[in-house]
Length: 221
Image 1 (cartoon, helix red, strand yellow):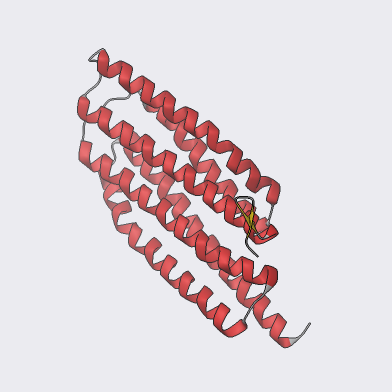
Image 2 (cartoon, rainbow, N blue to C red):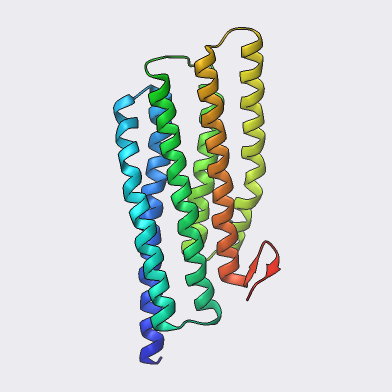
């Protein structure tokens, strides 16, 4: 192996490690944000609002590092696909982090208002969306195309769960058995979790691109 090739591979592995660090933080934030909503933990929610700055900084640092690799190492073929894919991955990870902040904001918005009626449905949905992100990251780390494709298929499950939450909220509003402020927050949290799942799909699609050169079944390079 040439010195240039070794330098490129080392740089790519370092990028992958930084992506995993960012993904770990984002996964923690999305999990903790829903837990804060579920338990009315305002202190945790406020802490998560501040944690988003770290996610934003990691996105910026990784993006700059990836661009430096392209400029200095001049990767081509699959190596270039991996670096380009990483540039896309961190954007979706940052947006997942934003949704963790959005959920924390809803916790603060409803304050100490307690209403547990819909939490089982939203909990199931949040767990499914979280698992999709986790699987998408594992697919990236392992370059596992089958796992990436499974993530894409699982999006239908989260979409169905979102519709289930919406139906439940609508029914309880009709029956006047739910606080309207809480109902709006549940809908917003469910929507954010649906978007988290959508970004997990994006992560999976970029992993497939790294492996095959195709994005959404369209050959790129």
